[in-house]
Image (cartoon, rainbow, N blue to C red; front, side):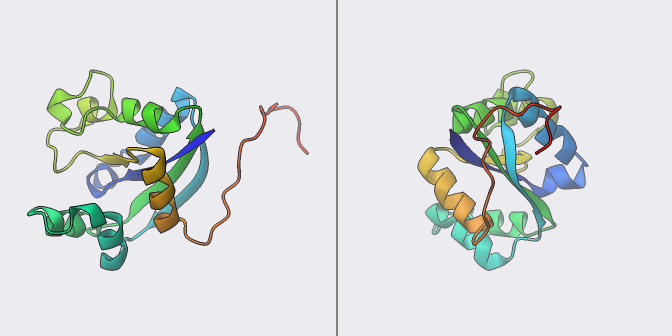
Length: 149
């Protein structure tokens, strides 16, 4: 079972697309094991985007992700990283496959609605940033909706 981090970015939040985005990932078969609504501060943003320090767009990334509250979610499932990224579509919305989140709702790379971890290693690092100190449950068996333990 893999885990991946998904961020519903400020442009999606401002356009009230959070439910649509999270729902598409769930309908794909990924299971949500963590969910937070938070206002990212500059320190957390710099940590999250650390690999881009020194690049001309770094400050823009930090300012963008700290602009308004976002949703951070952890999804779990078989090949969760690849599955989530497939649902999201290409980083460039105009190049994203039809039916993906970015193709359906995005227009520009700088405002592409959603972030998804690009590898299992990145997911582990990013989940540690956004869910530090929190225990996340695991779906370790199939759930029978009629059984309540």
